[in-house]
Length: 223
Image (cartoon, rainbow, N blue to C red; front, side):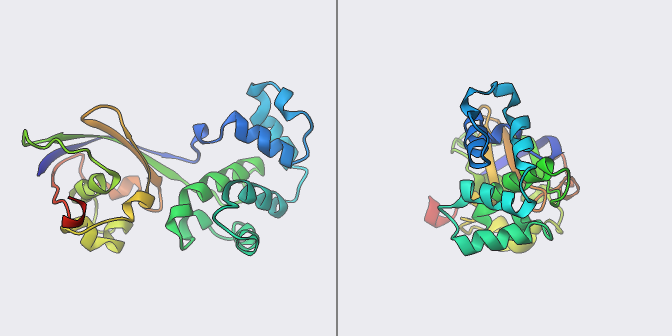
C-alpha cells in the first residue's frame, strides 16, 4: 500500500505542559507537605508546587515524584537508584525499559524546571504530518507502528530508530516496540497526524525529506 507523506512541521520542546493536570499538582503538593492545596487558585498550583519542592533536597524530591508516577512499575530500590542517576544522565533516554521513557521524561522535566537546571535537560520532538493514500483501497487505520514504518524513507540512515529496528522499519515484520518509541499519536482527521516522541529517538536533523512516498507492508501477524 502506497502513501504520500508530507512533513508539515517539526518542533523540539522541553516539556508537554498539558501532561501534568491540576489534580496531579494538588496530589503532589500534599506529598510535599503543602496544606490545603485543593483550596488554592488553580492558576497558581504549578508555582506553588515548585515552591514546595524547593524545600526538599533534589534527590528526595525526585523520589517523591517517581513514587507518585511510577510506584506500580518500579520497586523501592529501582526508584532510589533512578533518583540518584537522574543527576548524572538523562535516565528518560537510557533506562532499559523504553515503555517508561515517556513518564520519566515528564518527571525529569518537572524537576529540571523546579530546580532551575540541577537535573539534565531532556527534549521531546513533535512532528505534524499528512499521510495520504495513493490507492483508493487504502483505508486502514494507521497505528504507531504503521506511521513509523511509513516515515522510514524520510529519515536519515543515522536515525536511532532505523539503526536499532532496521528489520521492523524496512521489512514486512512486526514492530511492537513502536508503541513505546512513539509516546503519542494524535489523529486530527483522516489525513493529518501529530506524533510525539523523545528527541533521543527522533530529532529535526533525522528528517531528511519533507515530501516522500512510503510503502506499507502489513506483517502477517497483524493482519
